[in-house]
Image 1 (cartoon, rainbow, N blue to C red):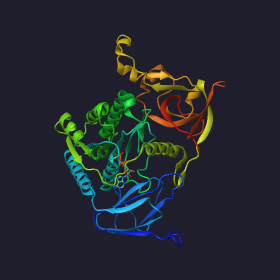
Image 2 (image 1 turned 45 degrees about the horizontal axis):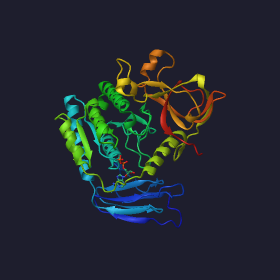
Image 3 (image 1 turned 120 degrees about the horizontal axis):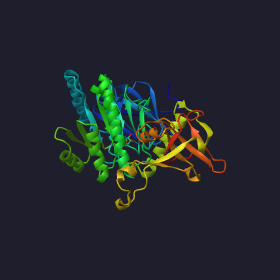
Length: 430
Ligand code: ADP
């Protein structure tokens, strides 16, 4: 489209290897900002812009338009901030991509597997952005890398409270990120690994196993390798979880963003053949408040049910009888070692399925629908390690009638009857 009459863009002329950073105000009433490339070439987090196309960014977006060769762009609307920066770590990130690509070439030649990369660092250092960049660059040179998302607080793939893996087949869409088709998703149930670290590590191992199996039968996936995005919790059990992940996936490379101590600890604790690399964070990465994080999580759940931008979904609402489903929480509250029954360890309690009796307090909770076969007691054992096939939200509970009302992406009936409860709640304000 041509710019609306009277709508004048603010023009920015960028020299080579600089970036325009802008933020769109957050909040319901905020106006979106449009971006147009006028001359030259530019990219947003590794995805190239087309000339004379208007890209629309909604409230809360924080964007960098980087150019290798120089370009000019227009911004329409009122960004909260917009400035050009000459100081970016993009060259270092590109070199990292080049080194990974060398490893893929060598893997191809020697019939080995490609690089498995773990990206670590505290919150708000641009971990997800670096993952997106490296994946988009890899796919742009014809690779088929896998994104492993272990950030249960801010998942780029599924709803919060999950870990997942996604095969990347095309660069991220400039406005919408990676197209999420057929991801492999596991239920974790809360937004921080600390609530059940045993489960978190278990699910990391499950993902690693599935990925390795895929690599055995799919050469392109094997050569493409994986990029693992992790949580920002880098101390104590959070740190142990990173070490566990490195070993489960047998990672070859660890990229540490902006955290020298973490870099030194990982160098000390990981096997010597693992390349641990310290990279600076971009000055453009914006710190997000607790509220901002919560809003992003909420938005992610809303998107799951209602769609995003051009694509609207129409979720269903129906009643489910208590007697038709089995609801579990994973992990019993921990009890002192001395009180454990003989032969049982804390591990067992953290991975235990605890039946949940439906009551009022179930309202607004997000429930994962487990893909585990219904029924048999045998299947019960596999529930923790089974991927989920979707999510529902409880919108009302009628204890008298013994039914609950749910919001579901698909019409009745539920595809499976084993439900796993999350700590996470979603209030449907539509
Ligand atoms: P982390 O995964 O470490 O929590 P993210 O990669 O999600 O951090 O980055 C936090 C925010 O900063 C995101 O909204 C992202 O779009 C933004 N961001 C990242 N890099 C830049 C940059 N160079 N300029 C402007 N904003 C950026």
